[in-house]
Image (cartoon, rainbow, N blue to C red; front, side, top):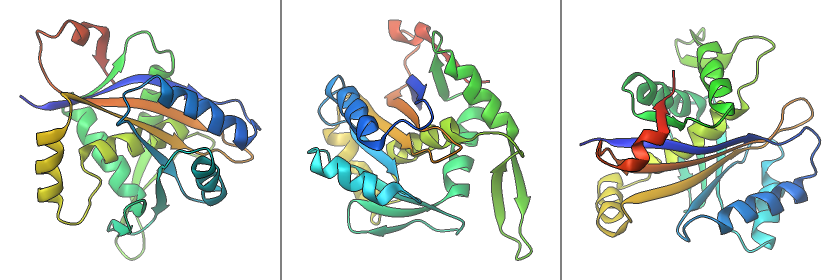
Length: 213
């Protein structure tokens, strides 16, 4: 039995949608999901003021500063600096193991698969592995999905073993997370709703999902 990551919703918000409207829309999505659903928000660039908007709206997201480093660092319980290579490499590992699945009726699922194919690994002069989209290509759906998967996997918290133990003991059979990659002038905001559930081929819901390819 292995955990699978089901993408139940993917969306690109139209360019130049005001951030307060995005906050309201994401809040509406959270209202339709289980109460313990976590919101994980891209904290890079414009992320801080939008992060504050969510707080003013009564929502407490986890803010992720996407970095070019090699290690995840938490600043308290709500802010983390996470290397892009961590987000993407974890997603690629789920992809190749067949554990990243997308609802068959989501048209953006094919776009996500294309973004994964368009990502390229390279090494810096210092020998560090980096990932980046091909020139002229987007990576917003990919990052929104990566944020959700990263959090559901455990989010690289200190004392991870203890954290995992209590999550598994207390959590519902299916855990949910909403990942949001905030767009700017040329890139749209992307939203991913993902759940983590133990693989059970006999589960009728399993037939509605297919591996991202």
